[in-house]
Amino acid sequence: MAGKKLLVLSDSHGSVSALKNVFSWANNFIPPDGTICTCAFLGDGLSDLQKAAEAAGFYCDWKLVRGNNDYDYQMPETAVFDFSGHRFLLCHGHKYSLYGGHYLLTAAAKSNHADAVLFGHVHVPYNRIVEGILLVCPGSVARPRSKAGATFAVIDCIEGEPLVTEFYGINEKGSIKIINI
Image (tube, rainbow, N blue to C red; front, top):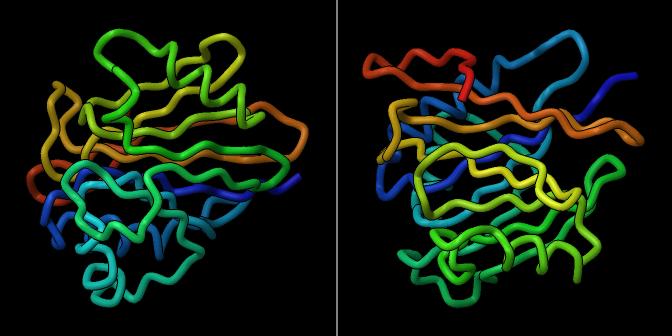
């Protein structure tokens, strides 16, 4: 059964070129079982998205939340959406005490009946199941804080199947390849 692909990005912090690079890559991302049709951006760079997407000719269904460095106060801080039989909670993460654990994220997911929480803010890729809930941080496409470097994620979503997350690294020349975190 073909799955839908969810591109997950966060924390571009003004780097339109980093986003454009990812969007150009995403335009050509055609695995045997699906293409990227939706993008979740988890804040701190909302003003970069339109410029980068237009420059790359990348068009998709956008799911957006604002981060602590975004100033479009009409954009929500959290969002919930259903995608290919799964429910996702999106947040930037800065209001969830991330450095003290993941209790607030899992509690928010449970109260929203979410299968997964997508969050940013820490700039470090993360992929764990906690209390039956998938927690994913894609890292940062422009300002990484881990040895993995600049990263983003793609989640394979097949209705009735567990979510599968793949992480991609961006090297200093802009090449993108799958990585293990």
